[in-house]
Image (cartoon, rainbow, N blue to C red):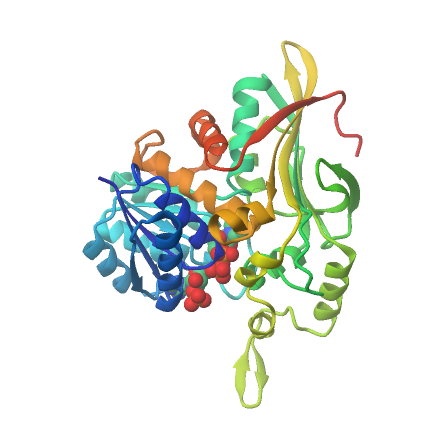
Length: 401
Ligand code: NDP
């Protein structure tokens, strides 16, 4: 019997809980806790209607370590799945240590006042989890997450050594709004407006945000402009695969999205430092979040597909080879199955899979782990079984950009 406590009732939490309920043989009992309990109850009702499974719900402020510890002790799960926001990561890790329970998340810890996208704070928990005999799995979403597992699979089965790695993240979906973000706007806009950074010959190369554009023809989506960006899995991939000489991350954006973002940035609406307004401090980006459509409201109106994958060039038996591994996910199919669009789906399904592998002991260990440190094979199998099928293609030549 494997009880799980999921924290965070957003788009990702909703998909993960639906998918867990569909695998009741692994997830025998699910509790969903979040800041706003009514959101947990709405998800519980949808889970009941779609799967027949009853889940428990609870109100929780996960910034409060004592309250989270008390809830974990009351629920007695084998695993806490953190699908709240990156700001809560350390508090929930502290609560897991206090209650003696394993931990999983999908995004690295972020301080509220500065966009960092780095693992240092969570890697610093290594000894504490090890000494407690507990496991923390970091970044079990799509990117980071599946892209890290694709890289592990490439190294295990396709190439003897990897020289260059490109992660290509394309969202070909259209939600019909002039401007909206398809996951938490605060996190999304922080990520997109950060300076670009990629790994080359043992060091980070920085550039201005969204300055380096490249067209690419994505299967089932078509030609899109993608932009060189920093993304957190670059840090762990550079650490765990020191052989890779160049690692880059690319994400597609439409012209309208970028124009809105530019204007919002120019007028100061994407700032994350406090500003005085009518006698009180506000954070402009948090105010903007309140004006934008809720990502969860995009589900019923989003059409099109995501196409996310890795292209790795290296050597196999002394010959240079290039392999492209990718998943294509349809927004409408994701919505029909779970009530959420593909961005939440492609994150919530890997969160469920990481949790399943920890609960069944297929992924086990003590300490803090990134996805690429673990055996890719069982994860790749479950992707095919749970709605995120992938395929491998050998490309005739390395990328020429
Ligand atoms: P949402 O904003 O939709 O949901 C976040 C949820 O967390 C909300 O229900 C929110 O509550 C809850 N929450 C926020 N603060 C607290 C708190 N202090 N205590 C308890 N609950 C809290 O985000 P998403 O579902 O889109 O994203 C969830 C996570 O997944 C994020 O960390 C995001 O960065 C990550 N992510 C990872 C991806 C990957 O590929 N690795 C891709 C996309 C997202 P309330 O409803 O009250 O606001």
